[in-house]
Image (cartoon, rainbow, N blue to C red):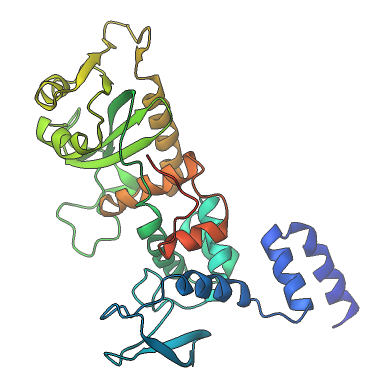
Amino acid sequence: MQPAEWTSLMAQFPHLSQRQRQACIAVLRGNAQQDASIALIEDVARQRLHCPACHSAHLHRHGHAHGLQRYRCVPCGRTFNALTGTPLAHLRHKAMWLDYADCLLDSCSVRKAASQLGVHRNTTFRWRHRFLSLATTDRPRCLHGIAEADELYVLASQKGARHLTRPARRRGGHARLRGICNEHECILVARDRTGQTLAFVTGRGQLTKAQLHRCLRPVMDQDVLLVTHGHAAYPPFAKEAGISHQAVNVRAGIRVRGAVHVQHVNAYHSRLRGWLQRFHGVASRYLPHYLGWRWILDARRIRSPEALLKATLGEFPHLTVT
């Protein structure tokens, strides 16, 4: 290497992330950059190794392929590896997966992550939804005590669809009708005072009682106090579900009445809406992934790239849900 190239290389070191510095140290020590990802994947798979076809644990080693140990099932003869049957099956560039998990925890856009990793934006887009498909299923099972519920409306988007059911909108655009209409997606958020949060995409248009029964009834403790604003769908739902209900009259300027308020869920709405803006429009079909992604970040459920990669493979040992 020429002296000028060496000087240029050294000048870039202060701008490296912690993971990039660790990768440089691994290269200098003669370790392959892929070793960390492969070791983590194999370690997760080893704890529950079985055939994905017949679920037999009677198997033996069957060589290596793409850096991973392959196995052959003795009863059915199928071969598989640690990624078979997981969201990350058939994906390449395993050495970059921990770096990409860092990008997810930093809420990087598709293009920014692609630029940092040196891959095509289609690759990082595919990785985003593969990584989030299992990680976003970690949610509270039940809300206790005082639970607040409120809905948030976002413009329905067919971003990325090959065939649109309406004329395309420029730069997001706006609905053709004023107020809440069938061009809006309803996001229902319920949050108790311990911070446990559940978010649902209920569908197009105004919230209905049937949607509340489908979304909230299975996750509400029988002794819960449901606090909402004055939407007409909540009182009949609470009565039929046998749940205590209190409403705040926001239109009359009464936002807080002792412990009866919806400030916590409104604050979550504010953070969610501000966070979604960085993606310049989210396709409606991917909204559940983004809601789960935001919950992971807001509650700090997953704090490291290694934990996110494990969660993507289906291991949640560090996550305790109620």
